[in-house]
Length: 525
Image (cartoon, rainbow, N blue to C red):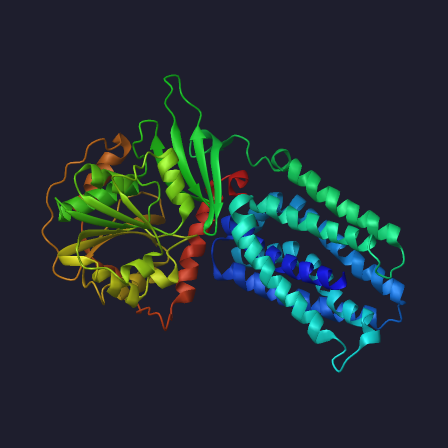
């Protein structure tokens, strides 16, 4: 029984760490701040727990008292998790607005400190309980071995069972409920302990609190209530979790003619917005298609990295192109087909990592469209020289790559690094940017090739929303050499990234913009 408890609490520790990263992502972004906070707070908590448990064990407590403390720790940890779940839905948005770095550390303290101190204190307590079977190491090696193996099991169960099937809020409460059950089981076992009634009571409180909050979670947090956002009132139509974040599909209230909007919302970011006729209302989709057709009017083969709602590849397929799409997140594929009309018979969707896919390209594509985002920007391993070298291998002679990227007017250095790296492999590059008065963070489109770019051709696109038409034609008419924006840029490689801080600053600025516009209820997942 004691080793079963140590095994399970070891799993709960790692489950809580993994869930904490996902809870925090919509508020603080996928950034160095989150994982620095999680890892440092975890290590501090474990150190405090081991020290405190050792002090308790050395304090002259009777074996029955040690047994009571050992059995009580899971219940108290479960209650601490329930308390954190009561607080974080209402606190994290304000913490992130205050400071992404400082707020991330406080958020980690709230989620992890008390549960991890309590559960890690169980290890030295168990060593003391087994003192009558003391070996050379006092039994510590076996205790920590079992706890660590349990941690491995906890990671696997969380990643492949809890995350795909439960919201992060509910999954965290299930960890709390499990810890309450552990104390109840220990209290009913033959373990030597005093005060079984108290252990039973605390275990019941942890279990009941976790289940009650999970049951009433929607009412308490308002996460599924209608929300005012982007000029409309929305309700959540669908929600899916995967290893790559939480996807929410929002549907606006229909107007008098039954027309509505549908929004693809991923961890705080708007991926796309379509009207009830499945027409994209997001500017970037028209810009990607328009730029591709301006430089390659009749592309025979098109490759798109990053599916989103599937609007852009579907339009190229409807125009007669053979289209391949690479998407790593199965939830994106599912919602594109279910909610945004993507026909898998017309578009070949490949579930794979873009980096791995381009490494095996055969150089047969006229156009490669790159729309790769996770969190607040493109992951570092997708902006290295080696990635762009492999991407170049996807293009036939004379082919072009079109990138949807973000640039911040106040932080130009991060963008300069991207361009400096890209131009080492695709040296002929131009920038197209929309004119958005007052905006500091904008879509910036890159068209690049290994050979000189072909002359632009006039473009005709049907169904362009009226509010985007003027901006789109201006964008197509203005091309600036990428070298104008690359001054001071440094090359990023797989082996060396000298610009991580600049990239992190740019991503943090983007996340602050998200926090200023997105309602807290939408960020909770």
